[in-house]
Image (tube, rainbow, N blue to C red; front, top):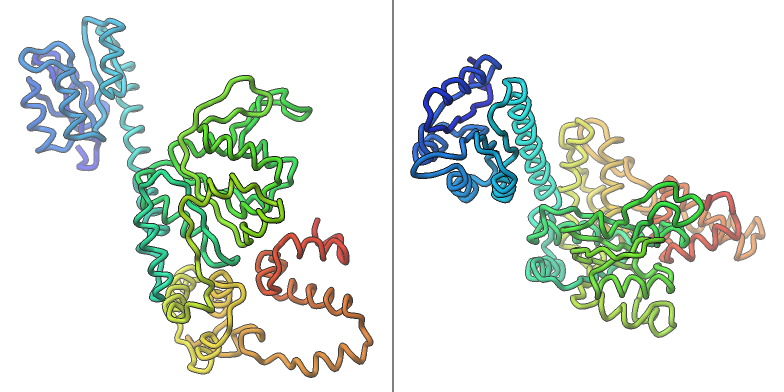
Length: 457
C-alpha cells in the first residue's frame, strides 16, 4: 500500500459490512480504516486525516446524519458518502442538505460504490486545487503585494482595508496606468467575497452596440445573431466583484440601465421577460473627470453619486517619488524571474534617469521599461543603453524641431507624425500612447481616425 493512496474511513456499527467495504476499497488500491460508531469515527478523523468518509445512516447512539453534521462543523472540507438499507427521498434530501457528496441505497454493486468513491475523491482534489489557486491569486493581488511608501498611497491602501467588507460601491479615480485595476483586485481579495469571481470589463474597449449584451447577457433569439443564450457579466460575477473599468466612457443610454441594476440588484438579459437576482459588489474606475462629465451631461448625475459612495483618488507616479525605488526593485525581481535571468544591478546613471523621469504612463510604463531593460541588459547590469531615449533624455529635441521646420510641416502634420512616432515607441499600445500624449483614449482614437484610419481597425 502506497502512503500516497487516498485514505477512506468506513463508519458502520455492523462490523461485517464495514469489513466488506474496506476489502472492496483495498482491492481497488485505496487505504481503508473502519469505525464502529460515530464517536470513534470522529476520533479517527482527527488521528488518520482521511480523504473521504463513507458512513451508514442507521447507527445506535450517533446516527449518520448526526455524524455528518458534526463532521461538517469540525471538518467542513471533508467529503461524506451516506449509505443505508432504508432509502427514502426524505433521507436523501436531509443528507444533501447536510452537505453529503452522494447517497447510496443498499444493495449496491461494487462498481457503483467505487464509481461514487472515485467521483468524491476527484471532487475533493478539484476543491483543493481551487483553494490553492485562490491562495495564489490572493498572494499575487492582495494588499500585501502592493508596495508603497508615499503617505497618499499608504492612505489609499488603508482606505481599501477599511471598506473591503462594506457593501458600498467604490469609485477609483486616477490617471491611466496608476494601478486602479490592481487596487480593485486587492479590494476584492481583502473582502469576504474573495472566494467569488472577480470579473473585469473595460467599458471603453467594447463597441457601444455590444456592451449591453456583455453586461446583461441575452436569451436565444433576442436578436438576429443570438443563436443561443449567453450569460452576462453581472451573472458571471455572482457572489463576487464586478469591476467596471473606464466607466466614464460608458454610453449615456446604458447608464440608466446600469443604475437600475445596481439599485434593484436584478438583471434582465436582452430578450428575456423575467429578471434574475444578482449579488455583486461594484467597483468602478476612470481616468476622466466625472464631475465635469456630469456638468456637460455626458454622465448621469444619479449614477455618479451611486458609484461614488466611497471615492478613492489614486495619485500618479510623479507625485509619489518615494515609491519609485520600491517599484523598481519589485519589477526587477518579477522580470528576472519571468525571463529566467539572475537579478541584475542598475548602473547609478541609469538609476538616476529612472528617478528623474516624470512617468506619464505611470506604473504601467515603469513596469514595461524595467522588463525591457532586464531583457536587453548584459553582464548582469542595466545601463542607460538598455532604456528608451524618452527615459534617458537623450532625444535631441532642438535638432528634431529644426528638421520639422525644414520640411515646412503644418501643425496638424506635426501632431500626426508625433502620434505615429509615440505609437511606434510603445509597440502600438494605444492606452500607453494616450498616457504619454496626455489625452484620453477617445481623443487619440479620433485623431487616428482622422489621419490613419487603418490604425484604429
